[in-house]
Length: 63
Image (tube, rainbow, N blue to C red; front, side):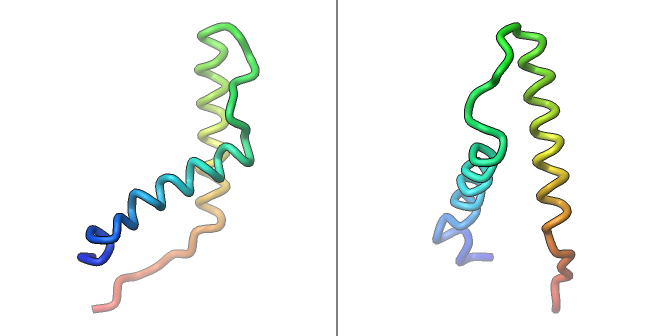
């Protein structure tokens, strides 16, 4: 865990997630009214989270 903190690994992982989101979903909202933008963003995030969960392996920490 110390190497993750010293190398900034977690910060880069977050940046990679946003890059994947923008490539798949897009970097702009397509609707123009404020309430509809919120709904569009919630749907996009839910779909993206579900997609990531399907591809994420279940790992168990070994001693």
